[in-house]
Image (cartoon, rainbow, N blue to C red; front, side):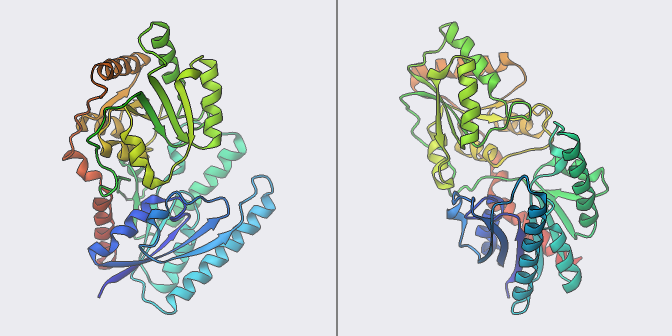
Length: 394
């Protein structure tokens, strides 16, 4: 008889958290069933609608949390907590749950997973999609104090988890220094959706970025790219008539881009578009000459889903800046592009690919497709299943 995992998540498709959506897609292939419980807020979009429906999900509707009214935030959090506990109780009253998986980017709902596991004797696995320690730039004092408090609570809860998983080896190392034994299951790409296109004869040389941007002081700084484009333009090495830098992002990111493109006087090169649905992303990526990956200097183990989806479509990747770690290693080992450490690295890569495009209307990328098979979502689901079975046996 198929075993069942109950997924408690801070987000679930059709909203965000594709990691859990893809796990749900491949559960049945490995003889497991699933059911999820997740909040959904009135600001959530449906970009991952194509990942919903593989397993039932009990959606707990909540209003957008206030950023300024701390009392209201506390009350809303308590209401959500009670809703999730009651929902889980109702599920447990009529079906057997073998393993509890809590996937989150925050502290919530690790506490609920711990309580449910302790009361009902169900082994639980904590899946951390982000950790507080991954951000190298410190915030103001009260924010850092709050973060420290959350970390201490998280660590106490994680000591009770049967297994801990996270998204990068750097995160595993960080948690290991805290006495927490974690396993890395990378985010990845769905090979049923993301694959190289055979047609790259494009009318424009396109540098494409898909995802949000942060403020320059936080990371994901696009200004080094704009600085290089400005230099190439001044030196007559590129022509804005056939070169585009295109961002598929949100309004806040558009504002950052628009301010920087005016500062560097390269507005003629830059286009901003809204997010497209997750199912439309492969087409956008396959229309690129270069795919842009932005990492903050001092990046501490952040390995975004977009990186693996970039690998899957086998277009040249320009990473700014190198993490001098796993991302750079994967780029080198897969022959996917360059992890830049200086503006000269950026300039050389763009100039080389642009000259190549001028001759052929194509940019070559000899990505090792056998190597990147390790990063498929199906392989990640298999890793989760192995840990589910290990939790039951221990």
